[in-house]
Length: 634
Image (cartoon, rainbow, N blue to C red; front, side, top):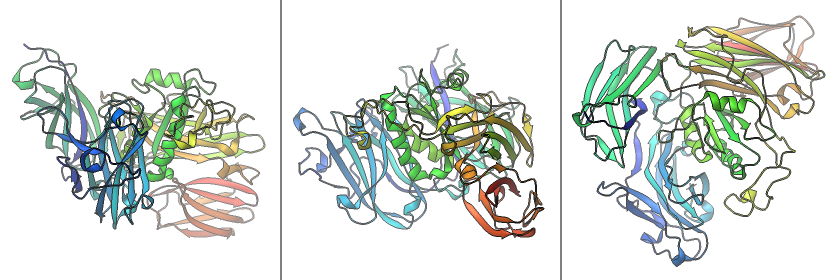
């Protein structure tokens, strides 16, 4: 028997009803109607004077990509911006722009998307997204175009080339956001790799990494939905070989008609009909939770950095661009410092030891502690990948709401936090509650800056190396929970409507600036099935301390205030046994203010029928005291 050596993993589950592709470019030629924006007055010697041209990727594959290149000794005139404009794209529905990209030189390639809704002159365009990629790494990008719905746009592809090298784009398209998987996020995309889905039929796409010289033309695929009791098999012919990456697409493989928990095992065998000896590297286990309803969900980005890392100064700049597109209220950011830096906590090395392939370099960031990258065997990826994976994360579903009740005494600096976990669907796994404190504008730790004498990131130019007065943001300062979360709070199997809570206490040190601090709480899950997922963030929430401490003497749970019924659906009654309240606010976990009632006297009834099911905060003011309580709408 022949011994094959190849790797196998699923890259997506997706609805069999595919999202509508509004525009796509296969790059057999330059896009129809594409024009050049000449900024420097020079005539580029490349196709159509755009600086962009078409190149075949892989001999004999008839697969082409769009490439920007040509800066060399024969074009020795400094950095070049190659602009290719695709005009007059009508975005009549909520859409998303997607592509793959790669650089062919190290540390020099920078690419931007620009958009104009007006003219075709340089000043008419605004930057939509920047990206940078190391040599040879294939990146995936997804950008929401929701803000341009109903408009005619001009899309510009801009390669900012500083040294000799090339940058290529592939699979560029604009897709409609599918309504049947929208979860309240305008940044939804059609790809689903997260293990929470709604009922429906799903395709499976798989990727086999072929490490043999012989091509794979057919392969057998096997799967089970019930821990191996019933095995289904099929043979997939005409496997698509592209540069040793074999793509397999199986339509309507799974039909999840009912809500529930499915333990799936998929494996392959017999490439080209030849039995294998080594079956250890060709299988993947998944646990899919099919939901009746989903909670509103935020994304957790955990950045890994160090003050000695000169490349790390670019990460906050890229993050600012990303949050400007996806919405900063939808993303919770935490920064772990590591590598013998003064800001390092023990949690950094504990995370690296517990989660394989979590961090392989700085700067990097983990989105939901989940491996969204299908072409990289790592969890935390470079900042240039954050936009696509955060956009993908915001489209995912969740079985749980998470919130916190906060009691903070400003005079004694004593903090009491109760983390509330409310399940809206059945689920199972090893659940852990996490809570920690972060701080913004932490100074006194000079930051190395390798962009001090380059214009790749102009805001870093000439700031020094190191930057002496650098302000570090989102710095994890103290773990309230254990480093890998607290287990035992939640059983391994839960039902819709189950509520669990965990209380933490801490006295905040004097050298922590409370008004710059945030509380971050989240829930992770280790699936009970034998999957590759070590810790998956199901939902996350954060709270700024200045909301509870500025202009107040103390922040406590108001024992003289009664709110009932809770959970509620149509109305709540607010009853106070002391003097009236100066103000009551109903605030969502995303920080959105839904209702404000001034001068509350004794007992009042408040209409909450307009609120969607979920967890909210009741913030009340009695004189110069502020109080915070939790409200559940069912």
